Image 1 (cartoon, helix red, strand yellow):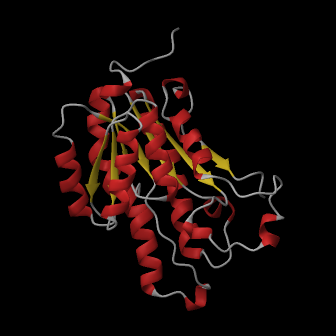
Image 2 (tube, rainbow, N blue to C red):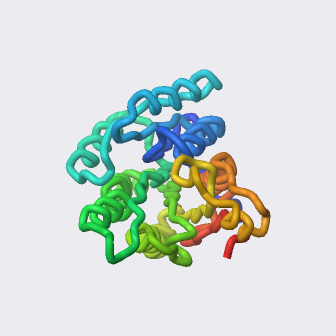
Length: 249
């Protein structure tokens, strides 16, 4: 039996990457564009950074547009996604990358610390993914890739809110993968460890010493994994949580 393939070439299959104005999201957007996808660079408030990512993609020969909406805001997101779907080219690849951290010891954690992290990661997953499911079903092909974290796999001190949100992403990934498998839509999660972004700018050396490969990962390495999961070759991989953490336990 041949491997199922989409009916459209990559150049006609748009990819939406949330939280793509910097860090891992920016690297993913650039990699998917290099793979031939027209990429939608989502951002919440840093228009200049998003424009730079899009400009870099265009300069490299790719196609990119920007879309400003806060994934935590359900009505704003639904309106924005509805506008994006006016383009006749389907959105067949969705990377739910947007997320924030508000770290604190649990007794000192505020309601806002908890709510903002859960709203962005978990509600954001629902808000963006839900309106895109039926268009993907009608297209009979899709890739949904959710960014979790090693914190969602093993927990982390001072990150009860973040760990809860990222663990929730894992559960949602596994359940949605089962629902959509027969529709030729795969759903997977990527769980990065320590990656060189602004979020971990001051990691002490003793933490790096706990990583078997003895270094911090690069955003481009995460992007390469996402690229594979978004590819035609990954059609038999779904419902998985793939750690990219240098062997950190």
